[in-house]
Every structure is written in structure tokens, then in C-alpha cells.
Image (tube, rainbow, N blue to C red; front, side, top):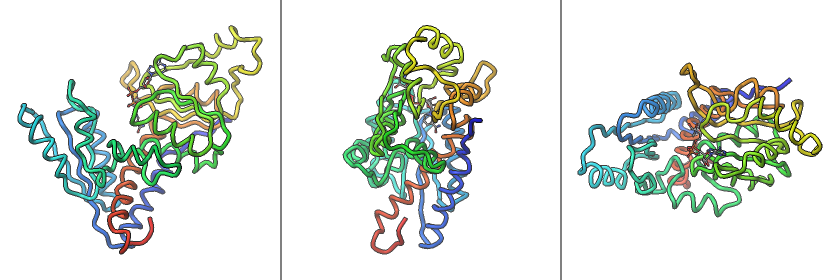
Length: 304
Ligand code: NAD
């Protein structure tokens, strides 16, 4: 029987820690969210972030730029990002088509970079074997594994997807916890990918394609590689599957990169979509804001 991991429960615990820190220190924390354009998925994510801030007592401000002209793109928005106020700040992605996201993200001062996505923050993150602050989704995955007491050390981990937001940072965090990590991507041969899936203890999917691996793939793989007992695609294995994907199926329903049935069949623990990694991304945005506040006021505040 496979265990469905409860991301909401773990997120609730993180939010309680944030709330406790604010109350204990009688601290004022604020988070500024900059949005450019009017992407409907972004509107939903921002709404969730604002609501989460309210729950824990962080003041949030949303700076929304709609109907943008050249002046906004070249002067106003860069200026806002460079001189942003607040304990923490973040730029909601994606930006409008053709905008250089890297350029705009990097304008946020690293002392306020609540997403931990600027080059300065990532430089510290990747050069540390015990990073103080981490990109929110990657940290959320580690929180989920820790909550369920899943051993990481010495495990074979497969991360599918190599984005700067999810794939790369989670590969780094798993490696710092002594897993043996393989990072797969769009150029990975399909047969290699299935074989790696079959032999991995921990699989993280961050692709953005529903039904990325199916029951049929597993069946076909076992048929093709039936003499290779080492890499048999086992159903009752002690594999952990963390599904980061947020997609819409053909009926418009929210789904991950893998179906819920598939995950339940090929794992001992798996994260659902929705209710898995998503709530932890938001909770870690709040937690990162606390860490930034703590760093700024180390001498007069309690520990985080
Ligand atoms: P991205 O588009 O930047 O990256 C997708 C990655 O998938 C790429 O690195 C690409 O190499 C890889 N990929 C594509 N096709 C592949 C294939 N056939 N085989 C192997 N790898 C392949 O996306 P992202 O920002 O990393 O997001 C990935 C998914 O995670 C999306 O669905 C996104 O909505 C979701 N997401 C969820 C959260 C959350 O909080 N749950 C946070 C961020 C992103």
C-alpha cells in the first residue's frame, strides 16, 4: 500500500514556525510581489501567496504592471526592482514573451531575494554544502522527504527537469544530503530515462507534461528489457516519487507529470497533485522571508 504524502500538513507546520517567529520577536515582516502583465496562472499563485502571508502575519504588497510600454520595461520596472522595499521581494514569473527573465530577476537585491533566484543568492546556494537559504520548491521537496523520515543518504535519486527554479536546485540539495543524483532533461534518451526511473530510490519529476511516464511505458520497458533483472520496473518497490509538475489535463483538471494511479502503483511514498509540493513552495517563500529578516537583525532576534 503506497502512502500519499500530505504537502498541506507539512506546509502548515512551516507556516506555524513562521508565525511563532513573528510573534516571539514582535517583528514586522513584509513581502513585495512584482507582477508584470496579467497571466491568469500567475494571478492564482499571487492570490495564494497573499493569503498565506495574511495567515502568518506577514504584510504583503503586490505591485502590478499591466498595459506596459517601453518606458515601463526599460526604466520603471528595473528601477522598482532595484529599489524595492520590504523584508523580502519576488518577481512573479513568467514575464511577458521576449523579456529576459534573468536580467529582471537579478535586479532584486540579494538581501531581499525571497525566492533565492538571483545569481548572487544562487552563487551562495551552490557553493555551500549546507545552504542557509534555498529556492522555495527545492526546499519544499526536502521538507516533504524529511517529514516522512525518508533516508536520502546513499540513495539513487533521479531528477527529471533541469530548470533553475526546480531541477537544478533540488539536484544540488539531494547531493548535499549524500544521494547519488542523476539529472535528466529533454535530451536524455527515453530508454535511459525509463531505466533510470526503474533503478532509482527517489524520483523527482519537474517536466510540465501530463502522463509523462505511463503504465504502458513501464509494461513496454519490462517487455523490452526482460533479461535485465537489475533494472526491472517493479511495482511494489520502496521508491519515492515526488511530482512537481502542475498541468491541466484534457478536461482542464489540475494534474501532475504522472497520474495518481501510476504513482501509487510504482512507489512506497508519492506526492499528489494538487496538495503535494505546491503548498510547500508557498510556505518556503514565507520561511525564506523570515530567514532574510533574521539575517538582517541577527543581533537582536531569536534564532529561526
Ligand atoms: P521548465 O519548462 O523550465 O523545465 C522543464 C524541464 O523539463 C526542462 O529542464 C526540460 O529539459 C525537461 N524536459 C522536457 N521534456 C522532457 C523529456 N521529454 N524528457 C526529460 N526531460 C524533459 O519548467 P519548470 O519551471 O522547472 O517547471 C516544471 C513543472 O513544475 C511545470 O509543470 C511547473 O508548472 C511545475 N512547477 C511546480 C511548482 C510547485 O510549486 N509545485 C513550482 C515550480 C514549477
